Length: 190
Ligand SMILES: CC(C)(COP(=O)(O)OP(=O)(O)OC[C@H]1O[C@@H](n2cnc3c(N)ncnc32)[C@H](O)[C@@H]1OP(=O)(O)O)[C@@H](O)C(=O)NCCC(=O)NCCS
Image (tube, rainbow, N blue to C red; front, side):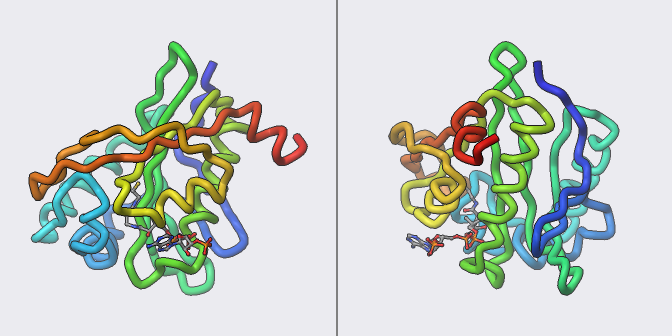
């Protein structure tokens, strides 16, 4: 059974994963949600007005009272900057499985932060929440995300053709990855 714990603060070497606040709206808009380079790898279109982000953050913040809601902002401990977001979602209580997704602002790409955040959330999901399997999918034209999944021990399970149609009306093939709790715990020697 999944042990829902909401969105507690998680600390890693360089990052603080913490609930988002309404006052994060500007950072979220400028650092990733309005950026086409980030949006091109997500399903939804880039935000064109801060009001859209305001609304989205409002919706997220309103769900923190729900223990089944796991949605972290990724903050750099060194500077206090909010650099991205990561969430566990689509909890399936019939199998104790869920999905994970994440995004970082462009200026922080390729510095290991995505891997550090995903590693921490996978660890939390398996050890604290008792999740059985965590899955994710990335567009095949976004190999960096697949690399992040592989670096935390997720295995590629196949490629689904035209799995999504993005906001630009383009169909995208997606590589599907997963990691089982039993394999994760074995890999880190319990
Ligand atoms: C995907 C994302 C979170 C990765 O975060 P990140 O902090 O840059 O990731 P890391 O630095 O931990 O690792 C990136 C890895 O991808 C590799 N990489 C980068 N560009 C690559 C490319 N074009 N092809 C193959 N590998 C690539 C890097 O070399 C690195 O691997 P390495 O450590 O073995 O050298 C970030 O790029 C992002 O936010 N992208 C936009 C949104 C998105 O794609 N979200 C995920 C949707 S599934």
